[in-house]
Length: 420
Image (cartoon, rainbow, N blue to C red; front, side, top):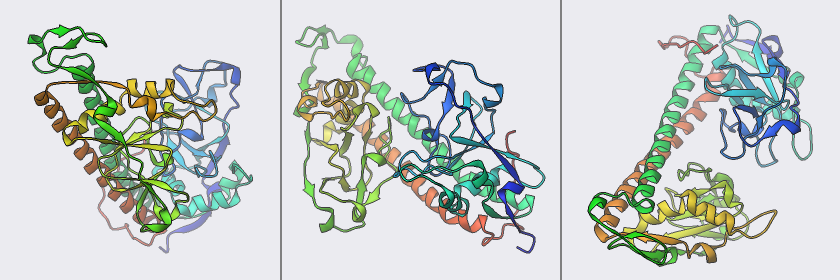
């Protein structure tokens, strides 16, 4: 480490504010997305949020249109409980992205001294993030500025070592993203099959089965309508977190992803406050506060959850797949939104949702779908657990690599140049 240097970021980069886009030109849809701190993941990277993006149709200086590969850093937290400040992202190849004033664009002064991938992981690391958070101001929502970012001090290794460090860490991120893509494909396939079989009635063998009249419209002969409460129950097992193992998994609404059943993050009961609900592996958690966020999760662990989630359990093993498919469907969530109560903090009402109509097929077809859905969930759980292990390993390696405690100088690593 004799060839590592202590420098300030300002000796290596410039950081620029974005543009104050005018509120009158924001619209619900479009192709020019204004990035905000809400598009940053806490651990680094871009996250797109269906239904909550801000698209722009007005004029703006060309310099605030971002190019693929450019590096941004969030200069403002979302809330006290969402420490986004200091988190980085790289602009992807697809899409039109605009530079908001609450974000800093980080530009390298000399690429012969600093690698962009290494710089990205510096911002991911606590080595830099702790300095940025320490220099931030604001009592409710904290924020920093370009000058404070440039004042952060780092240890700078030679360029070839920087690239090796970035290659090692990005390999973990690539594996995680690959698993995330597979999870998204599995979820899309499961919902598509559910709609084809149980909504459009194009199930295997449907060609020879006539549709007959029912109180809810045409339905295949041999099928019948039931309500969700006939195949699933709301489970309300209350528990005081202080009376159980503090290491018990705790799922709050903040842990539940939007539009994905893959629950990959949770806290611990030791940090939970008031009474919670107990859930088992295989239960479906439905976020009832602001149901338009579409938070429906299937945990791979047993634990406790916020009482702002509805714990739904299928009555018989053979209906598990159908219950999950119904509750996570767009149509069911839309019903939850339309029937929710309250204006500022609308809540879904199980007393209404339990009456949701469900088409029930003959037993053989129900078992076939249940087997497919169960296998899909098991595969998703395996990939979620793999990602948790990958993240844990990367988080252990990151500070040791960035600080030089793990020497990669002599490692033979194939290096890929960063996108310009």
